[in-house]
Length: 558
Image (cartoon, rainbow, N blue to C red; front, side):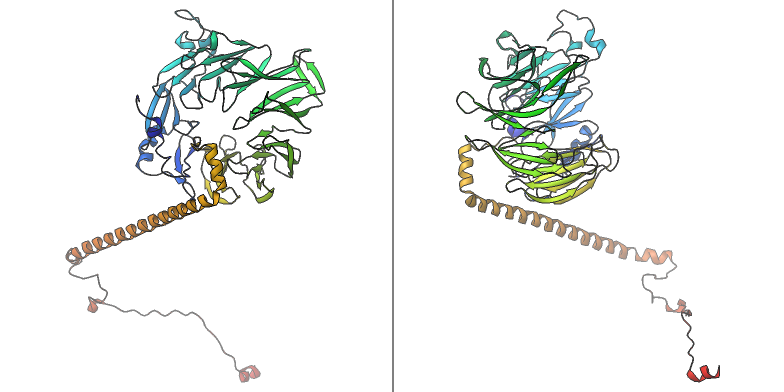
């Protein structure tokens, strides 16, 4: 692998098409790769390369890495990565009994976990050192270098660990951090040692999150008696505190970064009364608000937005903040450097979950997986018109493709043991395909890597969109023409092959005429009138209907 370009080796599909959408379909003990391109409905990947590696991949779970460069499969001996134009095995990582994996955002490192048994975890160390780098039996978490396949560092883990991933990575793979009891440990690469050789001691720390574009880390600390809760932003590696916000009457905080890192939204669950019962706090009079950190402004000001009656987790996307309450969804618009405004309140009747499309403003509202109705509503949030309403009974999964053109709903065998299937929809809510599949489990879209186009170029494209749209229309028509031509050529070849086979079999039949006559005592049975003297003609009459006509005279006599 040394000296080999990962992009050239593992992403040959990228220049092939502007809108290629590969996916991974996961029935039980089997994987199917399929491909979508242009305006055509995605089709199952066929050909030698899919059949060639199917036997090696079938029977194992699999996952797609963050940028879509590799397909990872689980095996008893460890993890295998697949990719390239021939779907070859790129790298193997030997870690017996691995159950969980996690990739760094830039796909430079792989973290594997083989859950330890209590006996293995508590056994005495051999050769000293029970911590990181100790005995092999306790090294259940391993960090690998993907390009070289080398083990970079190993860690021990609690056999009762319930949270995965164990580490959270910075956006550029330079740092990764781990949360322990009242401690935040930040490691740096490629040395994989503790930053400044010490951890941050933060009493009461509950959770943390990295900025998606810079090495800024946000964490929150729970209340302790008269000490309020606190949300803090620090810069790494300097550990300089950029901003802090004290919060009161806090039960829980959830942090959501805007994709471009311009905003950090902290959803704060507050209470009016708290009571401790059996070492567990009980809260009443719950209400909620958003604390929004404006990361691009001087000194990072914080704005508060109170939402009452929210009972489900809110989402923070590129330009909207959506809160779902009982029977209604509120969409808040965040124009840059302006105040927040309530864009619209959308009425909900049977739908309670929101799945936002990528790249386009077409979220889909649906019932949660534990409900059976599977009602779906496709909404255009630009004017809040309902493009379509439909249902997929017992649907448990919803997956938008990276371009926002298609969405898949599925009935997973993991949740329902009958009627397993996946349906493919357009973003307008039109069903494109219904595929029933026994023991269907999951469908994953292959991720698309970040765009190489700069923000200035994107603004220019939006400004001159009509000029560029004509070019893409020509390309789409050429693609469709190419597809039609391929279909016609395939049909023509099939017809020619059939006619050639027909002529060949007709010649073979004529060459065997003498042998047939010899076997039939010289009687030619190819023609019906070849032996008229032995022909017997038999006429058979069947009584079909008998009618009796009664005249008027006969009726009078009676």
